[in-house]
Amino acid sequence: MQKRTLLDGKKFQITIKRLCHQLIENHNDFSNTVLIGIQPRGSYFADRIKQELSDILKNKTIRKGNLDITFFRDDFRRKDGIVSANSNTIDFIIEGCNVVLIDDVLWTGRTIRAALDALLAFGRPAKVELLVLIDRRFSRHVPIEPDYIGQQVDSLDSQLVKVSWKETEGEDKVILISDRNK
Image (cartoon, rainbow, N blue to C red; front, side, top):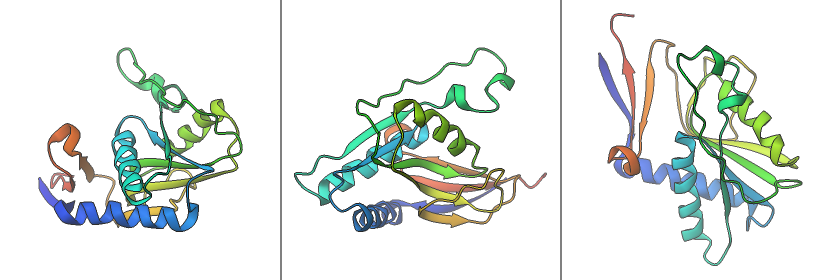
């Protein structure tokens, strides 16, 4: 098994700052924009984005929620055992708002498709954009592309992109894992 580090340390933090500045260019003061982290891993990323935006845009309210897509996935019945959902924490209406969906890795696009379906339970947004830390661009199952990208990686289906967060794994790091046997 081979491992290659894609992002870590200072480069990881710079990537988050860059993405926040791109968001500010397009959404100005965030008065009509909300951030929605896709449970579970996108929530950690959304928390980081919100914190960085709050540090940059002092005295501005940044609305952020977490969206569970468990029962909107097209494969949730195929899992062994009982499926347990995370909780939604969206305490605002998204009707007419600009929504920035946030996830750590975009691969097939099926998670994002499920998130779009789940999002409609909270209203009809004016616009939906996608922000991802890592874009695995050559394996889409649905026609979805991100608006904001931390880093693109060209990878094989047999490879795994693993994102570690300081809050859960003790460090901020993205690695590409290749299995030589495949």
